[in-house]
Length: 520
Image 1 (cartoon, one colour):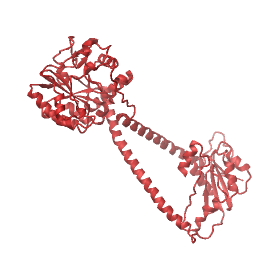
Image 2 (cartoon, rainbow, N blue to C red):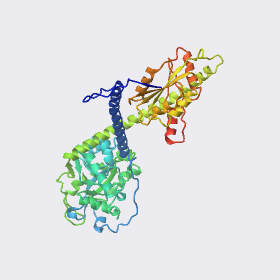
Image 3 (tube, rainbow, N blue to C red):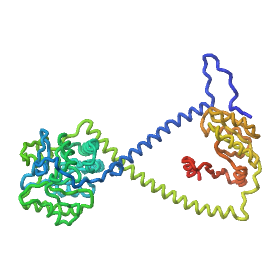
Image 4 (cartoon, helix red, strand yellow):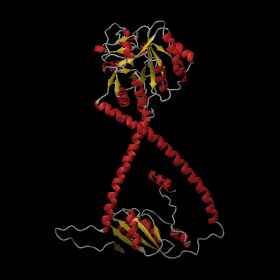
């Protein structure tokens, strides 16, 4: 039999619109509330995904490339570049190298900034009134902008060392451009400057330039970058001991040099200990210290061509003030990284807390399940007098034409007296018609406008005749004695609700397997 929720209305008068029913108004309110919630959830999911991808990119866990090229030919590299000084630029499109003046040291530091070691290096340089040139990794700049700001304000010079410390000889032109531009944005956001200095990761002297890396230097040179190499390598990354670091960083008597140290990329305590000794030693030998821009100010091209920095004078001549979109995009990058730096650890801590809570819940379930098993299987256990009164079974259904017949026939075989109330929630596939056509005893079909499952269940409760109500989905099948077992705990007056243990019937499919994990 069919029970309509509201009496049928006649056709609306001409020119007048029928007022929406209570169910239609409820459905409208539910839909209005659901849309912003779904949109908010999707936006939150998208934001968290972007934050985690950004954090992975900063840590080279996403898009990282650890390849390093060795032993390639240099047949395409000009001889005067291979034999030239450590400062390479392309004024007028012509490759030109510049040597560091005699009795002059350009202290260069790679791979920073590092929150542990870089501040100590800056303190040493400030103590001895010595400038340095720092080739910075963009991802580290974005994570530690305050250190870079202090570095620049102290009078040091900075250069680009790519964003993720990759060997550019393996990368496409688009990746090379991205590595440089992202580092420039990080510098703009951190210190309000950009720079024309560049040092490639894994580079050394100019005589190590090969046919794969040369196009990178040539392309960047045409864009106005000055590539900086080294004359002397302290090899401090090997941690050979303080005395060895000082010895290896010392150039031949009287010769100027671009000297390489590292302020990040590993444990640098030996570098911190060696740096003051090195500065004192070189000053005792009559050396002065300058930056790359300071060294090029004397305009001494090793290859004989005229050279000009094109950036002004001073120890920070390679710096340019960031303005406009570059400045604001840089600040946005720094802000986004700050959010990622806070969010990802918070998520990790949250996952740990959730994991501990889940394991604690599991342990508690084991204890309680064992106690419950002992109580339920004791000889004297019983809920009370058997519950034999009839029960109302409510079946909310929306477009369940494939399942509704099996559901209702399983209920019809129940060994406990029941009435079955099918609440059709505005189905468009004839679900209600199928339920009616079965002609099963004790089945009532209630139709309503689509308002969602909660509204359908509440509507079913309003139509229920009995005190005990069982609710099930329209695609669920009950065993004949399921209802009888479900209602027996109500013999105990302290029991207010009972939950069954749903089983997934089609666990071979992917969705079925997921449902099995969720339900069972």
